Length: 573
Image 1 (cartoon, rainbow, N blue to C red):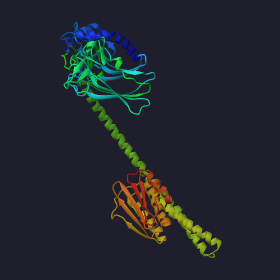
Image 2: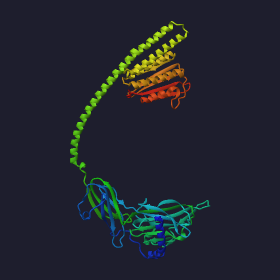
Image 3: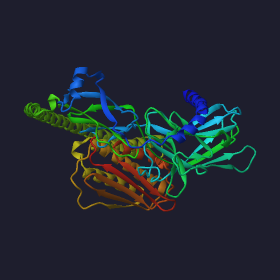
Image 4: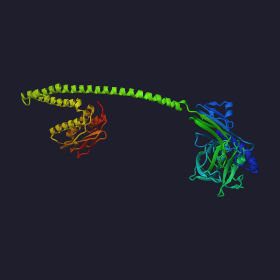
């Protein structure tokens, strides 16, 4: 693993540096954290994956140069870097595209608290990097003035682990910023022990701890520039271990000395707690990326920040523009408006003609359909109805000439009954087909007539509650027929299963719905979720076909109330 190789290499290198760095760091004064006249310059530009020509680039980066112009920008990559004087400090790089961005973009890099897992010989067998990037909550410009935020991580010791070592280090040499931590504790679940082992790693004990280059008792400096690892004294007199890194080509680090590395065995759980504050960025060089920029005038500004977060005036500016495409220019819209008006007028006229023609054709189709329905209803009534009536009459007369209880008399009686029943059903079909009956009022009248006749035969009282005047609303033959068959089924059910003494038919009507409610004082029943009692599933299915609804309310010995809701906008035909 690259990360493991890096830590092993750094560990070997740090062992050589510990003695030298510990002495030489004390002899050096810490670098000033202010940026010392470092300039940030634009280096190159790529637009739509094509580098800008060298000649055009030189002209664009001259003082008071005319803005570059691009017909469109699908992608833009701008390379910029710092150009330091000798022994100068590096800034944290940032960029801002005026005309597009609302805030500066800082280049990102991170510092980390690294946990090394060591075997019994001190070799690294695994690492865990606990990263910090950006700026911590409560950051106030310096470590001493900022609030430290608590943080924790849960780890597990790998196979062959004997102890762990902590290291505070930047992720890459280009990291620029401040990173500090303290209050380091480890809670270890020891194998075979019921209580956790609590270990505190001190950042306060040591020699000359009020000096930035003081020597903590448990920690040693390391890195290519060890004096970047400093001790910061807090207002309360306590101390933090900090990386005050202002160099983009070197780095510093704190390493827990081997004598103070806690013992940890394979499989043991570790809870690591600490407090930290930080403000981190990146120096050296970087890239600004933009995609699909809209038309407009832009200025790309690149600049730096000090470690304390103070902005340095822009070091370099690149101006460019993206003109709007031809379809966003005024002349195009004028011409487009004239053309659109003409097209809209022609299309409106054409559409109106087609709509009128279609409407007339639909009226003609409906008229012919109604004529055909009227003819069918008339023929059925005149021919089949008359024939059935004649059959019933002749069978009744023939029955009167026979002995009352003879087999022939009974057969003729059955023929008469069947003929009358068929005649009633035929009347229902004629009523459903006849276009003159396509109204709410006709449906209500037909339901009332059927209920009255059926309940009179069963010797059951019948009462209606109907508005004095029903609205003149149309209702398709399909909806009328389905609603009537559903109401017919409910009246049959009341007589067949309820044994009531009274049935009430209630009608309510609104501009959108017709409600038909049939209530009785019979035995009642327990409604099922799927309305399977007494054929109610068929009623619900009929209402579903026309876009309506069916509800049943009943309880044993408490009667029954059934409601049909029929939409008046139904257009089935």
